Amino acid sequence: MQGFLYGYPGAAEVPDSKTIKIPGGTERVVEARFLDGSKPAWKNGVPTRAVLADWLTSPKNPYFARALVNRMWEHFFGTGLAEPVDEMVGADNTVVSHPELLNELAQAFIASKYDLKFLIRAIVNSKTYQLTSRHAASKPDEPSHFARARLRGLTGEQLYDSVLQATSYQDRSGSDMMAFFPGTGTRQEFITKFNPTAGTKSIESQTSILQALSMMNGKIISASTNLEKSETLAAIVDAPFMTLADKIETLYLATLSRKPTAKELARMVKYVETDFARSTGNPKNLSREALEPLALADVFWALLNSAEFKLNH
Image 1 (cartoon, rainbow, N blue to C red):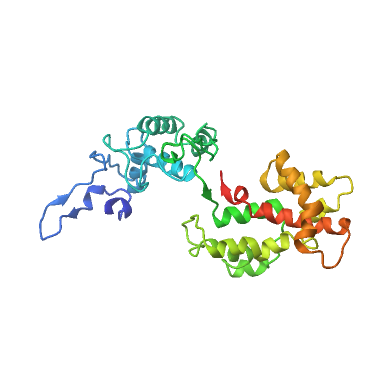
Image 2 (cartoon, rainbow, N blue to C red):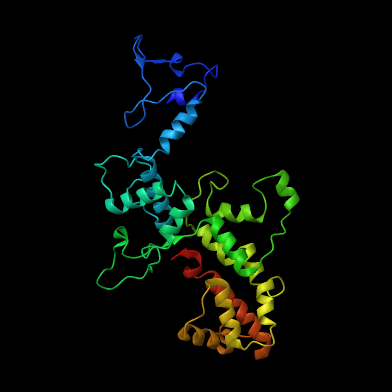
């Protein structure tokens, strides 16, 4: 591929003037060919990268569309139609879990002129992507066949953004300093606990004890569930037009984007009204009205640390 990666001295020079010889003192010249065995159609004045790009995005290229579709599928489902994802999936005899699906998506992707938005829309609007992670008793474990969604932890970036969206937390760690020292600040500190290699181009989902502790007792979560610092929590707790059930429902909507079930609502109402005082012992002998905001902060904390909030599907 060296001939594709380096430019030629003159724009009008014929590319064949730059040759690569087989090592070992031979005079045999390596002819430039694409992965499918075809020869490049060299043109005077046309950069070699442009020739390579034309072949990569050609409808006749059996590799590019399938490889990209497979990688996008793996991004959304946690596993590709062909594994490992970095293997080339262009040959007809490549073993994949769902060859017809891979071929159909690849052809549709080509027909859309390699529109990534089209491909993403097709995947996330599919019934397969929208399946629940819960499984029937008769089929306890079929994630490899996409019979149900596969639980995956959010990346540090995704979780940080989700926490900010749910809590209206304002990152005031010093934007001016971050401009001079990239990779610093509250966001980067949070992300690093989820992925030690944060700051590189690779973004992965990893779970660890440090991650769990960060979500339970970290600076952002502590501030987000503090009645004096959390804008979302303070607005809900102080709303005079809301009943206790309304406040709990609003906390669910803010964190999980859904209303609580009747069973969940009853359990949370009971916790706020009676269980919180019993569990803490109410050492200051506060009234029920004074305890309610503290109990709601506990509910908010529990929702932010729930599996439904921290996991995809």
